[in-house]
Length: 541
Image (cartoon, rainbow, N blue to C red):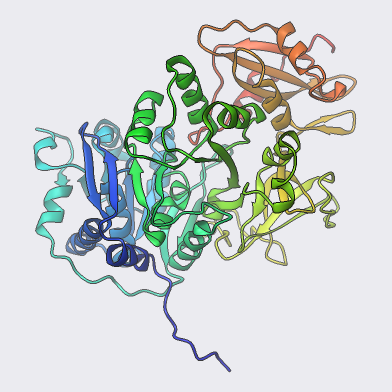
């Protein structure tokens, strides 16, 4: 026996139709690759997305086909995104910061038929095109005036395609049909594809609107600095459409002066980015004495947020940091650091003890931690184990079945993280399971140690890896990159850490390095560091 309510399919096109009908005049502002500031609104973007869908049909694209984008956060990318999924295609966002071989692998593995790409990437695409095996059409996201005079590719002009197309209806597909495709960063082995459905994207966008998540509404001006190729810009282009928010995007610009001006000039009150972006912003504000205008909240994810960064935003700029955690495999949101009432009423220093955690689970995300024996561990904030998740926007299998069966018998997905859960629902990542340091039978969290070290004077960034020790199995080696113009010493860092961490967590050595390697999504590349220092001999060894 079924309920008697209407069966209304949860399609991505419903989001942008809602924005166009109910919030049509709300602005979408972008810094373009051509160097201008472009202004449009949800009504126009909806019309042009329908034209993109019609143009793709004219190019021979069929429902289920993968259509790739190699692009920054701009209005054209948003139009393409909605147009691709609206005609029944799969919007495949490719991370341009990956290595050439990885980009080629991803495009060929996805069997992309069409590629939309920004002016920035003409050289990259021309170089890689001979290695692409399935791409038939190349669409340059620009107007006629900025098309190159010559190219090794048979290029189509995006603006000309849009102008020539007639806005048409959306393709009606099942809500479980694929709408998007994003690949993991591939730190070990080849990247794996996560194929989002219309249903999963819509449910995720609705959850992201909630008060205890992004608390976005029609009065919000949101700036997703996190790129659309990085797990859907954390769902912001979907979420902003669902609630009718003003959308502000930086295009190819990630430098602090440009982002600072954009945030202030456009009255941004919510911005989202990884910690390295905000570290650069804080340093820029320190040098210039600037402020962040109307900014009230910054959501930070991608890696753990240092306590010192939260305090700097609070005390120097009156901006509240909301930490979040998720994965490409989770669309990506899993937790967000909106305060539980019991925590919000605590004294500031005690509240910070919770705000440095990755936050509480959203409705739609179930979490648990298990020990090495597979048994569930208590939610006491102390026991830590492998973090497992399940829910309607969490991966059930990788694209084309890569990796085999990735769920256990009860449908839980192992995130690869080691975490704690407490009585208020806060989850805290202790470490990646492969990064945790095992010393004398006890575990040391490299994340906690890094976050403590980055608060030391002059330290711009810190990384901790386990190095072989004949007595303790592994001991921590701390690698530090200095801020511009600063001088940092091993003795100074160790003195700063004294009293802030357990004595037996104290690094056995500190090295000042010129740079630290990162993945294509901005995370520290621990695999390279472990390889680089695999033969390093600690002074205590």
